[in-house]
Each structure stands twice: as C-alpha cells, then as structure tokens.
Length: 277
Image 1 (cartoon, rainbow, N blue to C red):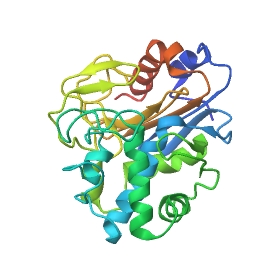
Image 2: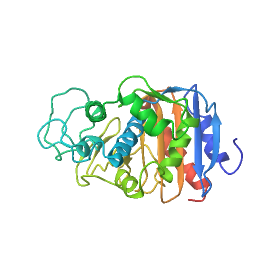
Image 3: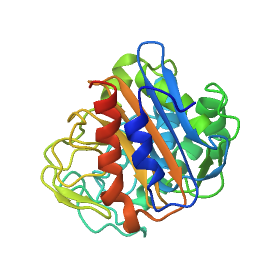
C-alpha cells in the first residue's frame, strides 16, 4: 500500500532515475509495513547479501558449529575479523594486504573465506546451511544463494521485510548475539566505505555496517548513529534504525554510483520525518 503517512517520501521515490524499483518501510511495535512497487520481484541484491550470510554464521556460532574467535586465514585473523572487514584482506583476492585488526578493509574475499570455514566445520554446503538457518525459518522462500555469499544472493523486498523483522526483534539468535552483530566491532578502526569514501572511525558490526558519524553516507542525516544495514552496488539498500524503530529496504537495478548519494539520504530523511522520528 502507499497511503499515509509517507506521501512526501513516495513523492521523492517517484522522481528517482531508476526504471524499476521496489521499496518497503517497516515501523511501529507491530511492524506495520508500507510498500511501493512490485515487492515480489526477485533480483540480485549484491552486497546486501553480506548481512544475510552473516546471520547464518551467527546461528552457527550459537549452535557451537563455529566460534567468533576461530582462526581463519592469515595469522591472527579470526571469524570475527572477517565478518567485520578487519581481517586484512582486499576486496578480491586471497593474499592479505594488511594485518588483522589494523584497518577496516572491505573484503568480498573475506566472506568467501567465512563460507568455506563454515562448510568445513559443518560438513554442509553454505547455501544449504543458509537456507536451513535463516531463509526457511524466516519464510524467505524467494531468496537463494547463486554464487558468492558476499554478493550473489537473490531476493525480493517481500523477503527482505522478513529479514528486517529479525533484525528489529531477533528470534533466530539470542539478544546478546544480536547486540554484538549490530554494534561496532574493533570500533576504532579507520577505513573506506566503497563508493562513498574514507571514515575515521569506520564502524562495522558482525555483518551489518554501522552508520556511526560517517559523512557523507548512504543513509539520511536523520538516521541515528546506531542505524545498521548494508547497501549493494547494484542499487539496493536495507537499514534498520533501532532508535527511530524504523526499517527500510529498497531494490533496484540502477548502479549506486549513478544516483545513490544524490537520492537515498533524502529519501531516508523523508521517511523518518513523515513518521515523526
């Protein structure tokens, strides 16, 4: 539906230079959901894949299959380092470019290493573990992994609304695990948010990016520093603001570099303003 109270936000969306998009806003104690566009449309979500994959790893941690302090990769690197892009690995490639815990270096390769580690520990292919641990329990029937867990999950807004529900009020992991996932890990590290620029510090959780005080940023100026989520270079984002008690997801296939910073923050601000946050 597209009625009150989000008319001003939807007005901005109607002007987006993206030919095909879908969007949902989730708010309130009952998780009221307001949508626009074809929310059943399935597409690759690019790096929005990472927090989905990370949630499966957190389930595995609680089951005792893996541990956050498991050594993975170069000396001193742990599963927690890789989940929070602090392992010293580059965007692509198996050779480290820094030591663990020194700098926030955004890494797809780190997530591929995470998937391999979980597969080895569990004896289950990562895509099956992901489905059993996260997708099936949340009813995300249109979501599937079709390659790297760093960037090749396909999903729909409808399914990602279910994920937002889990991120707002977890039932697959304990509250303590959720809190660790959505608060900064190795909090003082500087780094670069791809496509946006450097930040010092550059906070990241165990999968989700943390907004902190980054400027510029793909979320809005009204979003609290506690806002967490992820964006995908294909032209997609998902955020949850626990202070405002609002979640938002948008999928499109118009590359972020063409329009993201010009339109997404203003939309997020309009959503929060319309809801009185």
